[in-house]
Length: 213
Image (cartoon, rainbow, N blue to C red; front, side, top):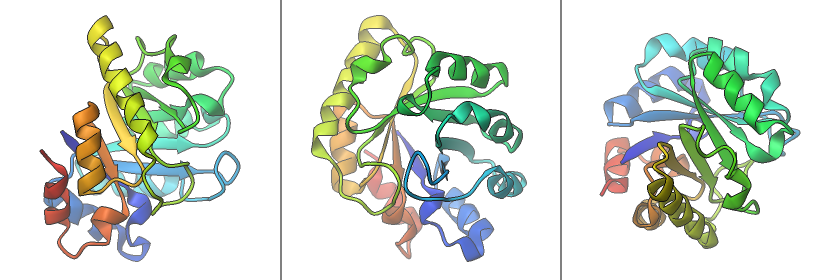
């Protein structure tokens, strides 16, 4: 089980210190939400911001592009130090080509689906990806409530992975806390993204530890 604190919930005034603290507290990935104000109704930060953090931490940079036409930003995201680049199925007409683009840059490729998109939409790319991210809230803002019906998608992805011997990790993002995180783990998740649940706590290590089995 891997824990990926979401940078969106960190204190931007002391961002470097925040990242160092969650790394020391046992985080595995740093989940970085890049938002463009078009695909989702919010704007966050781009490669210039997390690129400046790259020399300061050994955490895996798990970059989630919540942007329309993500192929426009893949190269800059890779150059800024991303390890995993994940794009929304709903955001591009050419999902397979974007996955190939990410891999051509030497990065792991992930695909994301929103709560309203079925797992079946990913059938053609599941053999190609390193990670599948299930949104357990509607994307765009932190602090939303977990959508219980998304648990069936996690279970479906686990079953497909076992049936076809695929190699992707299953990641979940949205409304994750100790209770919902346990449900995701039981359904088959490998990576839990948690933002406010971790960064709003004084003891970040205790928050991270509470998400593990």
